Image (cartoon, rainbow, N blue to C red; front, side, top):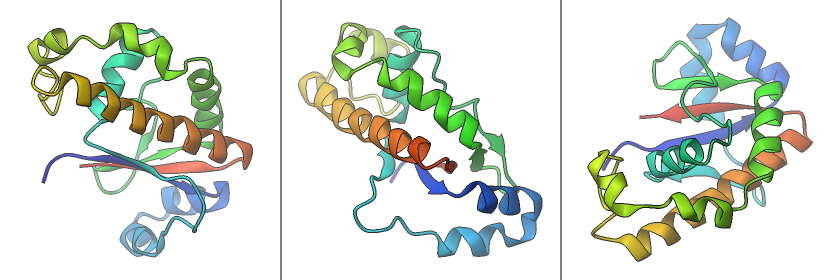
Amino acid sequence: MGVIMSFTRVSAADLERVSAVTEVLDEFLAELETPKGEPSGYLDKAWAGLEYLLAEARTGVDLFYTGNPLARDTYFAWSPDDVADASQRLNKYPFDALVPFFDPAAMDAARIYPGIWVRDSGDGARYLRHHYDGLVEVFRYAAERGSGFIQHFG
């Protein structure tokens, strides 16, 4: 068990509804399911390593401070404009452009969660690549549909 991050695609109308009516947040979130065939926004524990690489590469994508907090402090709303902007930026950076910033010793020294970078350096890079590719895909998919996200962090 540990701290994970995920993004769930929602329509702009649903995002407005959830942002405005906080008492239905739990009910709404319980009903959300990723439709079959749609890319997953589940980042598992890779979020901190990805945030580190995105910041070091100066991509302009910030997984932490883009969304607006919702009623529960572990959920954030990303507007369709936020999603489109992040998608456009992510598409400029294939994972190979981030690899030069993967420094297991520096990441462990900076206490980048989950603290596996030196121990699992080869697997760590593969782990981040897998989740980065998924991140790029889910943002592209949502941006093409004018969708927002509900981000869960916790």
